[in-house]
Structure formats: C-alpha cells, structure tokens
Image (cartoon, rainbow, N blue to C red; front, side, top):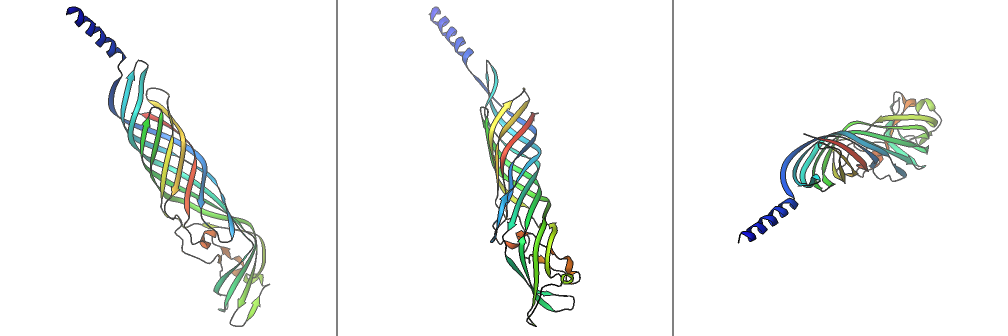
Length: 288
C-alpha cells in the first residue's frame, strides 16, 4: 500500500511538472503606428477617368486587452486575448481625375450689363488632383491567438483639410445670348474665347465619414513589455464623404469675368464619394 502511494505521488509530481499553468489579466497598451498604401477617393465620372492615389495613416492608439496567458518552461506566451482598440490618427487621401474632351453648359448667367446668356465651355485639357486630410478615430474589437491578431470595427473620419487643384488647363468659352439669338466667342475681357495654361484651385466640401475598418497580422514580442504589430489594413467608406450640393462647373463672375474659375469635378457627379484605403501597417505597443 505504501509502495502504491509513492508511485501515485511520483506520477502526480511528474505530471505537474509538465502541466501548463493558465492565468488571466487585464493589459493596457499604448502605441504609435504608421501605415501606407492605396488611400484614395472613389467616385464615378460620366465622361472622364479617375486614378487611384496613394496615402497613409499615422497616429497614437490605446488598447485594452483581457489576456488569457499560458506559462510554460520557455516563458510566457499569449494564447487567447480579447479586447478593443481606439486612438487618434491622421489619414491622408489622394486622387486624380481627367475630363474627356467635352462641352459643358452653364445656364442662365448674367454679364456686366445684366444680359442673360448660356456659357458653353469646351475642354481640351483638364486634370485635377484632390487631397484630403482627416482626423480618424477608430473603435475596433480585436482578438489575439498565439502571435496572430485580427481586429474589426469602425472609424470616424473628420475632415481637417480638403482641397483640389488643376494646372495647365486648356479650354474655350463661348456665350449664347438666347434673348438676342447671338453668339459671343472672342471677347476675352468678358471671359469668352480660348484660354490656355490656366491654374485653378479651391476647397472641397467634405463632412464626417464612417469607415468600415479591418486589420490583421502578427504580433512580435520584443521584450516583456514591448511588442511590434505588423499587418495589413483595409478601410471602406460607408457614407458619402462629399457634402457639396450640385453646382455649375464653371464659376463665372459677372463683375470680373476674365478671371472665372472652376469647381471641382466632384460637383459633376451625383454618386457617393467614398474614402478607401488599404496597405501595410506597423504598430509599436508598450504595456502598462
């Protein structure tokens, strides 16, 4: 009987030495991150082409993690962690649009003398770039398994700076005075005739957007308190970022008509304008 007890005790001790001990704790992570890749505006033009632009995202973050960790003979290894992530970051988006050769009509304009006319603009060259800077606030759930992680949720994109510019524009303006059934084509002082090498710029009327946000990758432990996240991210705008109302493309000034300007090509589309980005991200996180 004593011999049997000794055998059982030896077996228990041996088994205990090979057991993996589990514990749970709350972890607060403070991080700095940066990423880049495709970061652009998506919209449709009825007569023209839109090119995808590049950009990125950089900022600070905070993660609360409920960690279930495993302690082995080789040290601590995180197995299953749940939590959420938030923070503040700056997002940068760029796109470029090129209008096909076409004619656009700006109706019911008024000249210096008070006469009404339709302005017909023929484009030979028009290429516009759009740049959007936003303050992004993520609210995302995240899950870790071993060294891998995935996260998903939403981001609020608040516009900070939104602008467009077009350089070396080539166009021709003609005016049709429908009351007199007469054309005006060469009076450059009135804004009519060919215009070359013109530059235009202005602000875009953007509002706060809601983005679907996804991320996944690998968490590398650099020390007991410091980790490096590397992965891929994808953000998709769920709402229309452009809040501008439909406008005539040419902004004609009856008191200074020679120096007319343009609105953005976004004023020509009735479809939603969405913020979209995808690329590589890195995040350095410190546990507290």
